Length: 131
Image 1 (cartoon, rainbow, N blue to C red):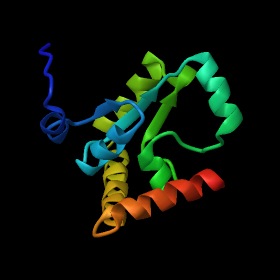
Image 2 (spheres, rainbow, N blue to C red):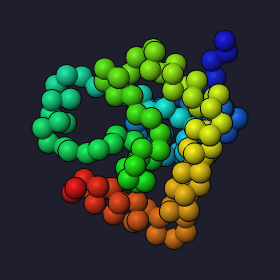
Image 3 (cartoon, one colour):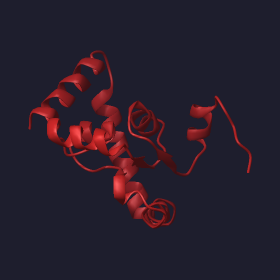
Image 4 (cartoon, rainbow, N blue to C red):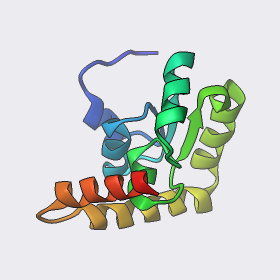
């Protein structure tokens, strides 16, 4: 296996699937059109604080913006080898599942397009945090 550094966008553009940590990388991966699984684990204290202070339905920007599960989020104890394997298998071998993700990505891309995209995204994130 070859390890490649500093080539994130070219790698994602030619990848069939990606495992991505939560953050802007999830949105970038979606906009590049690569089906992804969001994998994230945080420390127990951080988790306790987050659950106490923040009540959100999703962790990834893709799902937050779309207000539904577009990409699978494997968070904390759900992030297991078996769950990753199952989800990767669906992305790579279930054409209907893959096409649904790509279709939702095209809707996301349209939602973000044009002037004022940053403002619209910030508004959607703030609104999702309020509910």
